[in-house]
Length: 253
Length: 308
Image (cartoon, rainbow over all chains, first blue to last red; front, side, top):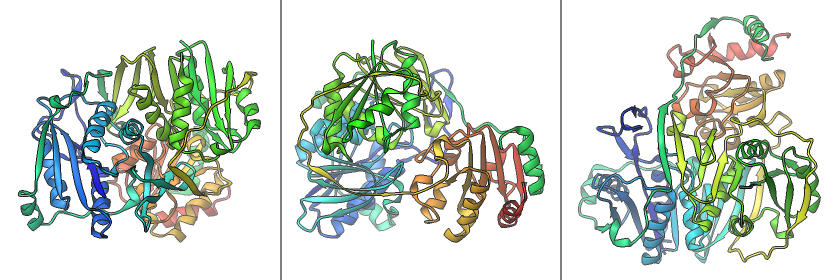
């Protein structure tokens, strides 16, 4: 069983997003970038499955300009077997529908039976790509998973899904796509020897233009503004009595 | 230019998310219908009573109890026909299904709409809500989820007609096993007027009971930071933040929460924010209307003992 793990390069999640007022875009020039944290969890799960002897190969896929190679090298350093780099000439505004179409193409070509990916990327927060991919290639879908168990015969998986009302357990026949939530695992760090080893692991480059996929934007960003969190004029209090009295005055009790 | 709402039911009750979706739809279209996928035909009555709905379209089939997303997305895509809009409230229910419907319709859905600017232009959050983007879609059919904290919740003085749709159920390669539901007598997190929320500072599941005790005293819902959920103090469905629930209550009382940006993203629109923490430099404190810098156990014991 081949496992494909799509990974995305995003603004480091501990960095504040800044808007460039001229371009009306989030300014990523010289910004610290990292692998989307949910993608790291997906990579970890794929490696765990491979280490248990249930997978033949793990393949990381990413789409972007040359800088995207860094993110694929990170996946390789964590332990993924090989990488596929879908190269774009410029910073295209690829949307989940485009990404899903590109991934569908690669999954068909690789005949991968299992796709493990993050439930959302922490830049655009769409939470869509895995679901859309499953619709395009008609794979079973398990979103927001916090537990993954492959059946003994390797034809299905049992997943726990973190949903608004609690935890739902479902059985998915393969081939399947799962999107991972925070509590599935703790991703490993790449060790220095593995970072060195990753440099010699295979990385295939495919020009996006060679895939013949329409990537014209469906959604145009008209403008962006920082909303952030506004500081409030904090008043210090020092007792339960004072707190209840303030809250009563504010009319929120 | 009619709109279809995908209704989310909790038992036989219509979710607050769906009520917000109706309000959003009414800003886009004069003709709003509701779609219900259910195993129980009697659920039509609560949906037909919603304000602002013309026709309730029911698809009733035994297999739709805990239905699979593969089957549901196909049914919804088949019903879309001439509808211009497919709208649902932001929740794990809709986020599971709507993008898959979008793919089947070759549409790029729009997540977490907070404001409607025009019939094809919307405001939605990026980067955990630190950036708000105004986006314009060129798709013929528009599929979107809307934040339930950003739109009024439609009431119950409607009298919609009910139409039963016949549909053929497609085969599914996935099946429901079980649902471990959190039982709670407390108000629901996303619609509560007051929330008492605990963080890593509580230290243990046993100590987290102090949060629950205070919540009961204030008739409030219980919330938690990601750190508290990760540490196993409370289950995932109480998590507030970028990847948990987004809330905007009248009162948000945060106890022992330092305030990662991912958490702030989920509660920054609360009307009054109270922070109880012994760390004056915690990012959470800067957002507070009231700050009580104190050992949180001293504060919780004093609050729980206080005679209101």
